[in-house]
Image (cartoon, rainbow over all chains, first blue to last red):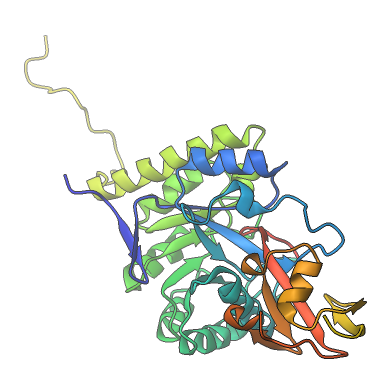
Length: 257
Length: 74
């Protein structure tokens, strides 16, 4: 059996789970969760250095950027300009151009502003970035992002941090069917079965943060997510049975005594 | 080092004698290879931090990577 991998912007990964690095109790717990999840990519934020305490522990001391791909994201940006500026700085800080773009529309729902997102995606792609893009679960918007230079589209399963699971399997499936770039569910996963559902729909991967970080035992949940993503992927590749309206016996009826 | 001058660093006023941006970064006890710098709205390429001269009233942003995910709220 050949190894099941996925490729984004020319980089190939075995793990289909991308995890965030926010909301953890401390860096030790965060690093242990990343290890347990098997993730090869983590999302990171770009922020001002703490000038008053420059020796404060840094993420890079715990999660080695030479072993784990850092995916700088623009979480917290509400305009294309802010997102572009953030990623230009990120490229300078990290030296790589694979990035996660998200431009939020409002604080209450954290829904993406697709007009600003598409505009930012175009600018970034023209500057040589490879943007993986957080978006609404809308197959048309997903195609527009692809046209704008997105190297992956990442529709939300449910609002960021809600843990509600994939609310609209139909639209996620439509995005998968229409996409020529990897599709990853980004946001909304609450527990392992949600991640499995996303993979069974044919997504290339799942991105999550809160579902692991806010679990009672984040390290155990990280392992659960790893297994769920693998199980969902296997089920997708295996091809599920058809749905029937009525029962169908598993044992032969012939020869009954 | 040069005469003390006033700059705006990450939104706050600061006085420094550093003559280059790299000197300023080290003055802050930070490693130039672990941060990214924006001056007056323009990225300063890391390869030029050692030679980029620091001017009076420059507005600098010095950033690095921190934990953050799909969920980082503003």
